[in-house]
Image 1 (cartoon, rainbow, N blue to C red):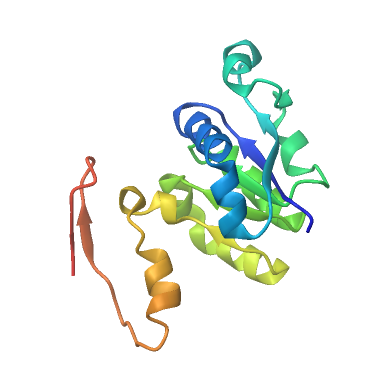
Image 2: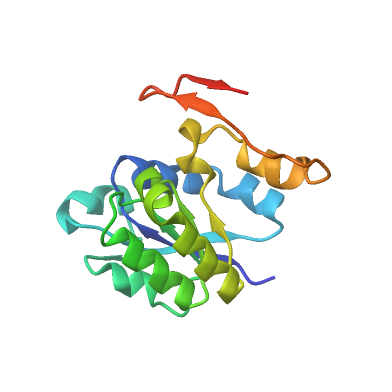
Length: 166
């Protein structure tokens, strides 16, 4: 079966951790996913700083090299902020790529635009890492509680991700 090819936007704390986890747990991830998940390339601001972590992973300073790469199936946006993150996510969606983001600011400010574009293009935007410090609530709501009619959800979340959820 064809591997799932991933492109990373950012190799800072979160992006570097993501790459490390994907590499370290590659065998188990492949077993669970039913096929290999390969990181093909990453976009970074500083090539010299990222080389030690990246190893043989191809790097670029132009994030559109990742977003526009026809071999990449999933773009993982981990650069933060609104721009160029929004533009990159929208371009990835326009290119028919699924997107994963941990960018709270982006989802809060442009979520409706992003989700509408993804739905129109038939791709997924996974954003659970951007919600409540990564507490797995989105999947539970979307998949585990589909028979329920949830009218609203309220939460209080502070900067340390302590939370009250009702």
